[in-house]
Image 1 (cartoon, helix red, strand yellow):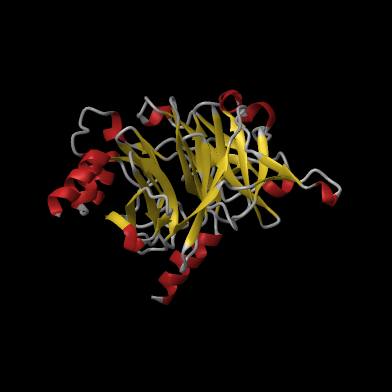
Image 2: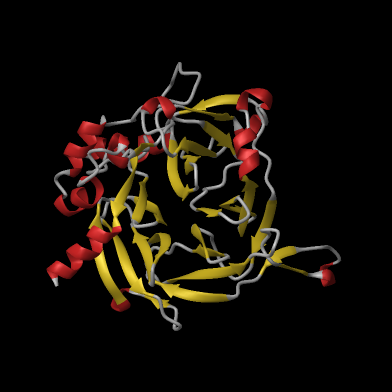
Length: 357
């Protein structure tokens, strides 16, 4: 037991497998589609939401997370030095008109973080990845958010312990070519965030950037930031310090329960994903309220999920969900390894709850 614990929980978290690969892997890290469906069939409700009625969709509506075995990136300490990483850990998720985007960081802290860009319509493994945009440095990239009006992708970062939001133009992501320069993708705006300790996850909704903070054991916060006509976060400048100090101030705050990993809006509901370690995850629905108090006792409904859920995204009546259990650091001990982005049918989720109660 001690040897297994040290291997699964300690060794794998700090060690990268050697690889001879020279490109980002395109296939599943653990399961074939059939194997993934079979593993998740043990969770009947979840399997029903994810796979029922999707026989005609490519890959049953799932998206293999590329790069879990091998990812082309940069060796952080040596600048623009090409490198292969075998310990990328998925964190953030965003969905655009054309792409499904997944952010990941190196669990051994040797390599630059990345954003995988997956063709939304082509579900075959040959389409993965369209690109893997290498980011500056090693942000945890726990959150991704897409602004459809200004065609901007936001990701969470930090500097010297200060939470930051960073944007990239989608045109820049589409034009990015790793082989051309071996440099990180160019960013559009970098803004420090006032009023929040960490930007653990984020989403974009009705012209505002929502940023949430993960706390293990205590209630936490979501901050809402305004965006101007150019797509920039609205900032204040502190001239008393003798410099232009760029920082965004929230419009308001909401209180949320502990262990939140992602958020999304659906009709009049706020959805939060909660997860910590190998404990079962859950997705909780809350009625939107002027009181902005989204804690367990105020929840409208809750759904049990496989462990290690991360960010969630709503598009129409579909809920895209991302798990980090497919990462090398975790798939040695996670009971349910999910190495794909899955889509859950929100209509079926609501109907099943109404039938139960």
